[in-house]
Image (cartoon, rainbow, N blue to C red; front, top):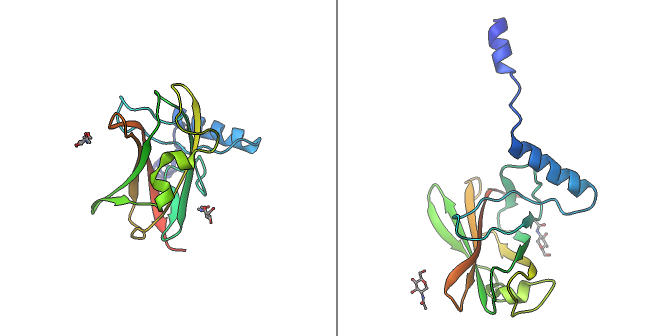
Length: 170
Ligand SMILES: *[C@@H]1O[C@H](CO)[C@@H](O)[C@H](O)[C@H]1NC(C)=O
Ligand SMILES: *[C@@H]1O[C@H](CO)[C@@H](O)[C@H](O)[C@H]1NC(C)=O
């Protein structure tokens, strides 16, 4: 009996990932944005230095999102090369399959969502970009969101990351 009690309450080992998430939130406490942890799409494509999703705290492994409401994220990255025409793409992947989430017209052009500079942008230029889309998804079915920015001139992906979200009804 005593042994099984000990097993049940064995503390979760603290991993480097947990510590880094904690540090991100400590930084947030002192005024910086609380960055969400995201995953790379593949090793050849740049992941933004920072992604902040409205309503998602850095210590959550899965971000809560609200069905049929606006999902907003702000990201910061250094332009991997000269870019003048970029299109965002948001793909949702669930146990039931893949679908594309499409935003309003202004959202189909990355240049209109850049907050700190204007297009074209040059290599290494720091870009802050805000993207919003209506979460028209099924409730309670976990989704892996894959967000990409496509460089129209080269027809290739300039930026990409994945983040897990959980849609709930509000
Ligand atoms: C996203 O932005 C819109 C417009 O600024 C706002 O109304 C909405 O509440 C935001 N969503 C979240 C989850 O904060
Ligand atoms: C862009 O690249 C995709 C695959 O990466 C290809 O299917 C498509 O035909 C290309 N479009 C143009 C205009 O080259």
